[in-house]
Length: 425
Ligand code: ADE
Image (cartoon, rainbow, N blue to C red; front, side, top):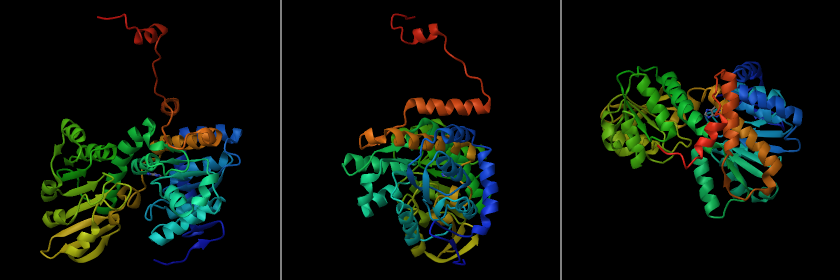
């Protein structure tokens, strides 16, 4: 890949010449994100984020661009980086840079460049941080602790990030309040389930073009993301097998009609494997040892540690990139195993991430959390906070309005009935 970039003090992107294509992608996303666009109108009038400096570290996609431009329209100064080396859309990054946003992001960066980009965004001395995977917050805490004092608060988008931040809060290591955007019902029950389900299958199909009907599709993990993948693979006619460590999750998978087995057994029969666990080494050497010739392996969890590729590299005799985002590893006995997107998020690396319609609600939560931190953040306890129930209902309400679905309203009598402990059979 050519190492030519477009750069200035304010940005570093692959090629500013891609901006026009990126702008069309952003226009497309805007037309499918009515909740965020409504909030943009309201808060650009109020200038609710005036005076705020927001550093963000989140996948640079067309949907993220709609969020970034909504934050900017509400008066914030922004500096942005991507949160995964393979998830940046270079066209979108170019369009944001052209529009005057400070952005440091390009597709295919290495780990050193990844942290360089984060550090560049921190030069603005943010008052708010916005994360997906918590790498920005960790960078503040571990490498730039002097910045924490002026940061009012932050938000976190993913299950994995929220889990680690709660661990930091328990240990007293967290230095400023964080809002767990992931834990909003209008986020996890839509983005994690329907977004991950559709976009992960989209990534698998773009990278392989295989027929899913009749295949044994192994989903590691039956949390919200794993459930989404399982549901959608079943809808395509796959025979879905779930692996789990949590008894209740395994039972839910069975009652949803899926087979549950250990990975040691699933590894022998699976045709397509996807990890959605947040755990490392879910698929490792002993599983590769018994996989069928032609097995396809990918990950949709935040970090690229779920598939142990070091084991596979050691076991394979050769490797070649056979299609975009699809590497063929040949084992000493001639079996071929295909790894998609280098074990990174297949939905963002090989496809375009979740559809705009679900990101609309996730990013409405991000936006309203930024507004809340700007106004109340200084009074919030330094811990991980949930999204208020009213915010969830408000976002769902606007979404329903834009879909045009009618909603019943309880009568006063019905409301009273709910609390009426004198009423029985
Ligand atoms: N995470 C998953 N899908 C995404 C998208 N389309 N944009 C930003 N973050 C995402």
